Image (cartoon, rainbow, N blue to C red; front, side, top):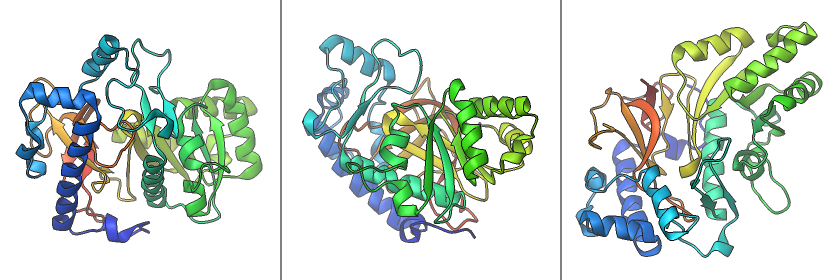
Length: 340
């Protein structure tokens, strides 16, 4: 069994975890209903009352939150937050758009509070400890410059603290995930010898191309661990190919940035753990919106139980996956998501 950042939460008994989820769900539904115009109108139209939701099994009574509906809300009302903003705008720590280029028409805008940020930092600390990070380790973390991942979560500054690097005691090298940055990633890897890199498969390919130009093998950069931060769940075959090329241990981290959601696989690599003290995940039939059975493929739906800025309830993602609620040998009790 590997190290666990927060054993009292990550290894919590399922019965207790279910009680916490039910409590947080009721609290969050009341929060969004009275603060987010989009949800108040959505639930009124659907005929659902908050009193109808007694526990997490009643979550299906609520309509799905779909990207097209949020975009329509923005277009119709002119509200850049699509009617989801639950705090005064001056209470937001940061605002960011979707992680894609070029930016789509009517993009989904996310507002994050300091409270939201602190919770996400804890989730990422759990993830990195699953990957075997120790205090004093140097790591490379790559993302777009405007993304919150590095500037709000991984690395601290005088105004934003604590960060993942602070609480784990690691040394972060933050870099941009663009083609022109690949030589810099290469140079800092050779100079500072990070044990771990967080990147996507595309940038790793660019980094491998730099290695080829210099006439060295990718494994000579010395990464012991690679975390693939993607917007989809990679297949076992894709993960193995990366591990074989770099001669490194590989973890998958799914990022649904719109809903502040990051989940990752543990050292057993039998699915990505959902932090169920902060989210409710469902797998549904995309056409009917109905939940499918455990082990059946469908679309991932995420309910954020902690966000104060722009929370989303039953957010339908583009991720196709299967649910696994069986106990994990790592000792964590939180359910796992597996690729189709």
